[in-house]
Length: 112
Length: 115
Image (cartoon, rainbow over all chains, first blue to last red; front, side):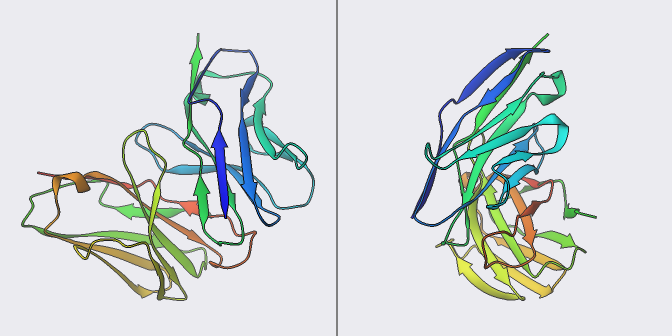
């Protein structure tokens, strides 16, 4: 069985400051992990993925995530937030069950 | 090209209507998915097609009927829906449904309102 926990339902940052969205996972097998972003009334866009290659994964729009097996974490970071980053972010795990298991989501607000 | 298209963008239907949602991809993907997403919630898997055959049905009511006419197209036929079926319906595709490394690409969704 696999599961994913997003530790914060809401995160608020000021424009130009760092972003940290936290995600812990549970999987019996070596998982694939993803971060997706969803802007209001839009579909989901893949930000980045971890598939057992490098533990530090770089994605689009300046986002990156680090896979830490010892901590079962896959936190998403960005050095400097932009207003356009305001959206819902989903951490997703894909394990032996083949299908995606979504976290509950983190709403990111960027303040001017 | 990593685009999945969905039509219509918005749909309003009565409980006695029959309508269909359409999804299309031209990435050569052999797995396609339907998800339902309620407001402020993550997507919930409804159906999975693998090589044009239905491989997963997540106990979805029969008023939702999926169809995969070919490897690029996925339809969702709707009949006698209830107001609680109002949601954003997302289509996704991936290279295949098995294996660990195949990311899913999502369409923009169809916003369905049942009156």
